[in-house]
Length: 313
Image (cartoon, rainbow, N blue to C red):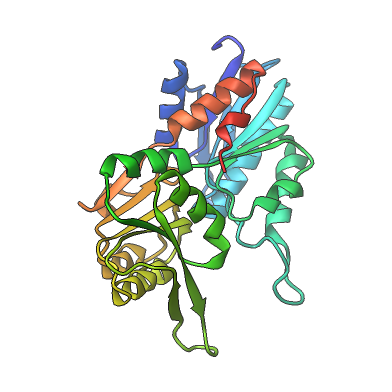
């Protein structure tokens, strides 16, 4: 495999890239990433990629725009060095929340991202838990959208939580919550979230039975942490017992960890699609690795095998 497969890591999540390489039993390909004094990014692939199957691992997390430019330059470098195929491995796909026009005179930023990634030379995209599944249709190249649910389900099963209810923090995440509830033999509830008027705090109502139940709030990402913490408060007011928080992408902007603390969660569980500084990981936080899932997907793509069994819904 190592004779024809090359895995390059950008600067956004090198530890995840290393784990993926170890799963595949190969070493990361050498790359030189520098930044000029004026902020321009410089990329140099330090290994021959002519005729190689190249995978470039880069989450487009904070600083988002810097990591996007770095990804594009790595793709272009591989393209101009005559790689046979280039797969952009984007564990966390930035700009995914801007997937439609919600008001006049605004861009569809996720579509712009899709355009520039494929125009730069990517032949394929491998990502995880897109905020909106329809983003796959923004590309004219194959997109494999992995799901972190199997990893989260295995972890939750090992906790052996009794009287469990899976809760979606909004109606948009109901399908994800329903899938977890089915596989955990748990109940299902949905938060009805509404804002009476501008600048007025959200009012949350619980649809479903949570009284005297242990609850796990499930989402694809947590950014500021405000909404999911308010949801935890609403669940307790509705009679919920221990509240768990489970999500894929730890965006965790600014004071998000502090806001999560206000939710008094029994445990906060997320994956390593985005690296989190060790000083922000507290005793009640568990970080699950998605490296085996990405490693297996890369192995199957490289070998021309089916990856459909990895796309659980």
